[in-house]
Length: 436
RNA sequence: GUGACCGUAGCUCAGUUGGUCAGAGCGCCGCGUUGUGGUCGCGGAUGUCGGGGGUUCGAAUCCCCUCGGUCACCCCA
Image 1 (tube, rainbow, N blue to C red):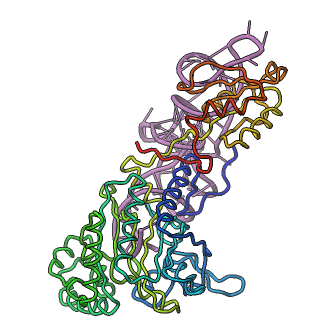
Image 2 (cartoon, rainbow, N blue to C red; image 1 turned 120 degrees about the vertical axis):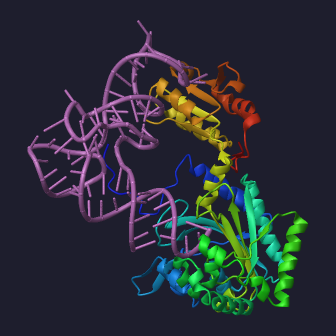
Image 3 (cartoon, rainbow, N blue to C red; image 1 turned 180 degrees about the vertical axis):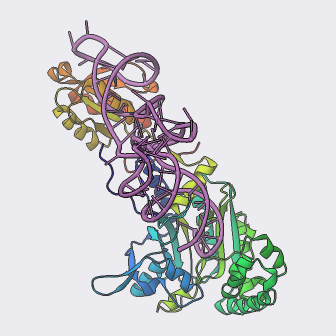
C-alpha cells in the first residue's frame, strides 16, 4: 500500500460514508424545519471582499487575526467566510429583496486558529436570517425554529441561555460603566483577565476563572442599563418563549462572539458536553449590521449552528444515528456482468435502490458484497437463469422469509416492487432518521 | 500564537531497561469440490513503526527539527 503523499490540512477533515449519511440526514432535517417556516435557501460566494467580514468595532483585531485572508491575482483583498451572517447581509444589501427576507444557509466557515475538539479551521454551519422585522416575535420565531431543529435531531439535554444587549447606545453606555467599574477593581481580578477587563469588559464578566467570578459578583449588568424600549422588547421575547413552552435560562453575562448583536442574544448549550467549545447553536438580533454594510436601516435576527458540534452533542446523548440499509436490491451476476448492468438500470428506473458488483467477481464475493450492502434481497443471475431468461430472488434479511424464488425477467420488476413495498421509502429521500 | 501529552497495518491497539519488535484483534482478499451472504475453519495481502536528521555495533524504543492529532490558555460554531 502506497504511503499517502498528502493529508488534509491542519484543522480540516474529510466527511465520508458511512459518517456522511448523518450529514445528509442533518441537512435534510434542517431544511425541512426551516422551509416549513417560509425560509428559502441562499447560496452565496465562499469568499468576499474582506470588508464584508471585517468592520471597525471592538473585536476587529481578534476577528482579523483569525481570518483566512489573502490577495488574489487581481490584487483584491479577499477573505474566506468566517461565519454565515455577513455574507447574507451583503447579498441583502446588494439585491434589496422585499422584506421580511427569510433565508437559510448551509456552508463551510473558516477560521485560522488552533485546533481542538469541536473547533476546526474549516467547520460547517447551518443557519438562518430574518431581515426586515423589528418585531420581538421575530426573535421568538428564530429561537423556536432553532429549538425545533435541535429536537428534530433528537437532542433533549440542551439548555437555552438568553440575554439582551439592548440597543447600540444601551450597550455603549453599559460597556463604559462596566469598564470603569472593573478598572477600579483590577487587582481583584485574576491576573490573566485584567487586560481583557479593559479591552473587552463584557468578556471579563464571562470569564471562567474563579477569582474573576467572585470579584465580579456585584458587577453592573446590562439589564440595569437598558432603555425602556429595550426592556419592553426583551420582555416581549421572553413572554413569547413562555407562551410557546420553550424553557430558557436568563444569562445576564452571556456574550456572543460578534460585536454586531443588539437586543436578544442566545445560545443553546448541551449539558452533557464538558468542554469549552460546548455551544452548538447561537444567534441573536443585529439591527445595526445592515447599515454598517451600506444598506438601509434594517432590523434583523438569526442564528448559526456548527454541524461538527451538533454531531458531538448527538453522540454524547446517543441520538441521531442513521440507518445503514440504504439499498433495496443487490444484483449478483456471475455470467460476465451484462445482466447486472441492464437489470440494475431497469430496477433503478422504477425507483428502487439498487447496486451491483463490478469486475466479474465470484459468486461468493458478490454474495458477501450483497450482504454488506444491506440490501433486502439479492437478484442472482447465473448460467441457468441466463439460459431461461429468469433471475433468482434471494431474501437476505429474515423478515422477507427464507425462500428463494425463480422469477422470469419479464416480471422481475413487478415482483420486486411488490415484495419490497413494505420497506420502500419515498424515492426522493434516501435518508431516514432513527433515534436509538 | 503559548504550553502539556500523543503519532506502530484501512480501524482499535500490544511492543518489556535500545539487540528476531515488525505483532494481535477487527476489517479486507481467497479457499472449505465444480453457482449462494451472515456463523465457523484454513490460508493470504497490506506498514521503509508520521517525516527528516542525529547518537549507537544496533532505534518503533534515546536526542533534535518538522508535520499532524488531543487537551488547556486564547478565541469561538
